[in-house]
Every structure is written in C-alpha cells, then in structure tokens.
Image (cartoon, rainbow, N blue to C red; front, side, top):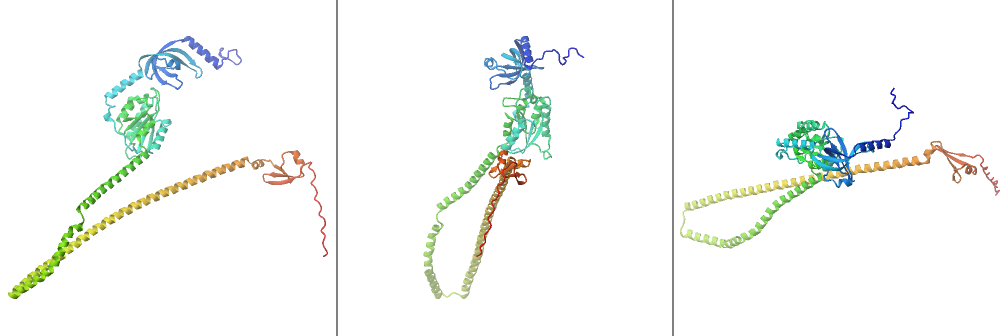
Length: 518
C-alpha cells in the first residue's frame, strides 16, 4: 500500500475547483509573464463583441489566442488565416473551460504560412497541367433530371440543398455520403465523384446529369481535404458537370478551380442547378402567347394585303358593264340585220337559182360545223362542271379539317376543364375531411377534458356528493340540520338520514270524506 496515498480521514488539504484553478493561473502567469510566439494563424473568429479569437499553430501543436476589443482596434496587422506571425502577449488560463491561452497585444507578420505556401505550390503545379483551364469546363444542364450530391448526410448542408431544390424545381436527388473533413475526406470525395461517373446510363441506379460537392464553412484545416490532389484530379476528370460548393463565400479550395462552376454557398449551388418552376412556367406561357401572336400576325398581314389589293382592282361588275351594254346594243341590232340578211340572200337566190347539190353541200358543211361546236360545247360544259365539283370537294375537305380541329380543340379544353374541376373537387373533399377530422379531434379532446375535470370521474374513485333540500351539503353541521340527505354515487343515488338529524315532520292526516246522501 502506497504510504502517500490519501486515505479517508487524512489531513491532506482539500481544494475547491476555483481555488485550484486560481493557483494554476497564478503559477502559469508567474512563470510566463510576457512571451513572443511564432506560428501560423488558423481559425480566425470575429464575434459581434469586437474581440478577436484565433489559433497559433505549427506542425505539432495549437495555442488558443485572444485579443480584446480595445487592443484589437490598435493592432497594426489584422490576423488572417494562413499568415505566419510573431505574437507578443501574456499566458493566462480560462478557468471556465480549463484551458490556457495567449492574450495577444501585438502581432508582427513573419512570412507566408506553411500550409498556404504548400497550397499555392500545389495550385501552380496543377494549373501548369491545364486542370484549371476554362476550355475544360462544361456548361451546366438547364433541367437536370437527376442530381448527385457528395456531402455528409448528417449536416445542415444537405437539408439546405434539398429544401432549396424542393422550393425551386423538385428533382430526384441521389446522395453519396462522405466525410467532409479529416483523413478520410479526400479519398471518399474522390471515390464518390468517380463512382457517380462510372454509373451506366439506364441502369438500376440512374446516372446523375449534374454533381454537387458541398460542405459548410470552416477553417483551412477543416477544408484541407478539398485541396488534396486526388480530389482535384477527380473533379477535373469528371464527365458529369460538377458544381463546387465548399465553404462560405470567402473560402477558396483547389476543387473550386477544377470544377465546372463554383457556388459561394451550398444553397447557392442548388439555385444554380435548377431554375424556378414558376418562372419557367411563366416563360413558357409567354413564349406560347408570343408564338400565337406571331402566327396570327402572319395570317392577318396577307389577309389585309389581299383586301387592299381587292379594293385597288375595283368591282368585278364594273369591268363587265360596258361589254354588257355593247352586247345589249348589238343584240337589238342583230335581229333586224339577220332578217335583212335573209331577205337579201333570198332575193339573190331568186335572181340566180343555185344548184341543189351545191346547196346540199353547203348545208351539210354547216351541219358538221354545228355538230363540232355542239361537241365542243358539251366537253367545255363537262370540264367546267368537273372543275367546279373539284373546287367544291376541296373546300368541303378544308371545311371538314377546320371543323375537326375546332372540335379537337374544344374537346381538349373541355377535358382540361373537367380535369381541373375533378382536381378541385378532390382537393375540396380532402380539405373537408381534414377539417371534419380536426374538429372531431378537438371535440374529443374537449370531451376528455370535461370528463377528466368533471366530478363524475372523482365519484368513480369512491367519493360521493351529498345533497339536501337546498342543494349540495359541504359540512357535517349542515347535514345534521336536515332530516334527510341524498347521496350520489358513480352508479346511482340513495337517500339517507344523518345521525343527530331532526325528526322528519309527520304528515297531517286528511279529514274523512263526507259523502252526501243526496
């Protein structure tokens, strides 16, 4: 048994937590009154109080540092993440969290940080290979059917992305869970990007049309996994367009240069991935209206031009009025001239007799000519009738086609109206059912509350309600003053006479009835 071990009841001093914390603080401040520390700044925090909180680190250790509001305003060099500085101040403890920290009152730049120098060297080497060239970047799809998201499934980032996609344009989302910081971050993110690219189109798991690599904000060390060469090469080799949404707007990682598009935040990545459904519908309706107006304009302009030309041609009857008048004039002269010609020919024949054979040949020739004219007239009439029949048939077909189009449009319009009416009826029925269910549940709750607060539930536990002639009786003295009481139990009521109660007044006897003899 150790002789120095404190046994129960020993004389060792018992410190309180505050006493021990104060002793540690005094010892540390006495040993390291004022020190100069060289290190790289990481995780700078500027809360609304005006104080500055940051870390000083090297390749093995991290030291918490703070600069109070008054001294922070007088610093010649504002601390920024990745800077290598020499900080001057004093070491103290913070008992509230059992940690020590450096109170900094002066900062001097000491050169570029090791991490930032390594990051810049890697960026230049990858840029020299052409991984960041703008020619390699692909345009984002306008309406992706499937979106693949590479992020942590337990963080707020994926909820923000899904919420934004649901508000703007509901789309199918496939999540590939990965670690977004630590040693396993880089290989998991690179494997996720390559895994999405290896999916076969039309397979059991749909191949995404767009990838989003997302993570919330953090320090340079937290985001370092997205600066690894494996992640950058996987993003550059991706055949699927990729949006980088790592960190906040001021955070920059190497995957941002290799991706096809960089989003300042994960929510902004969701906004860049899909359009707003309402705006898309409005643009489609506007385009449809413009197309309708343009088509109508292309129909109205030739129609108006034809009307203008028809006014320039004049009335068709005016073109034939002069010819009709000449026909009437010559028609009136034709009959007398024909009779005169017949008389003249008759006189000539009478003066010079014509041989019968010559007359027969003349009449036969005129008869043949008349027959030829008759055949030509019949053929012309037949052709004219056929042309008019064909024109009427074409007009009938066009009229039938126009009528069919109008009827189809009307049926579609009626079908859409019927569908809208059915949807509204179904929504009204569902709303009525929900309202009835809500009112019924509220009524049941009120009834249960009435039953739980009512006295009938109390009666079931063995209590009774005592009533007298004037109402409920609440004391023994009042019960003794009435001749009889009524006891109400849970299953019924009974009458009882209290001990020491006054006797019940006797009823007055009725006088005997006197019967009349008459």
